[in-house]
Image (cartoon, rainbow, N blue to C red; front, side):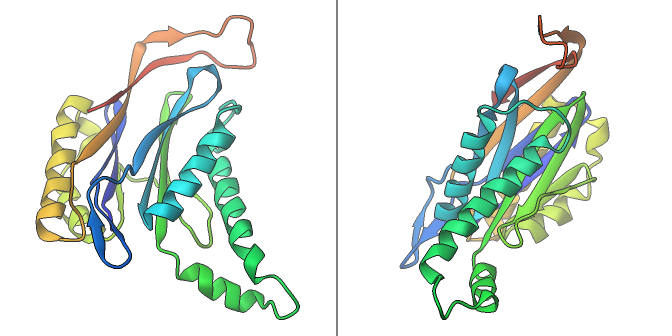
Length: 229
């Protein structure tokens, strides 16, 4: 199981997670890689995270990475649409074994509802930060308009703690310790969450503008630095 938290602060975006996952039959491992940077064209990076079923989540995240690699960030929905396509591709693969003369879409939809995976995507476009989330079924990413958002089994505790902070007034160096604190508290109270805490961040520097020579279709934007904490 999982806790994933996305935060938009004064000068950046952070996504943090635990590392615990459960494999049949009830084997707990604290080595899951639930957050990653995905590179697009023109050295653009987005953050992708997944909660719940680690095998399913990893397959979809891998597919997002494959589809994003040749793509250019042309608008604020580019990455969420790639995410929609990645989930749709995985659903299509899952449907193949069930296809036949007795196939019933209703029964297949009930199977899809049984899959426990939720996804988060975060990135900048035109210097504006975005966070999107989607459940595996029905598999459509939606923009989250709040400064903090959590997914996974630990989200009720996380949301209670996050409500006490105004991240719009915090810089990334101030928001990161808060994010670590919240994840550690979730791990303390929810035994389904655990393992090392991992943090990714994208920090925007509006004093430095990036231009792409010979590519007028790509608008100049502020320098964005990506890192692991």
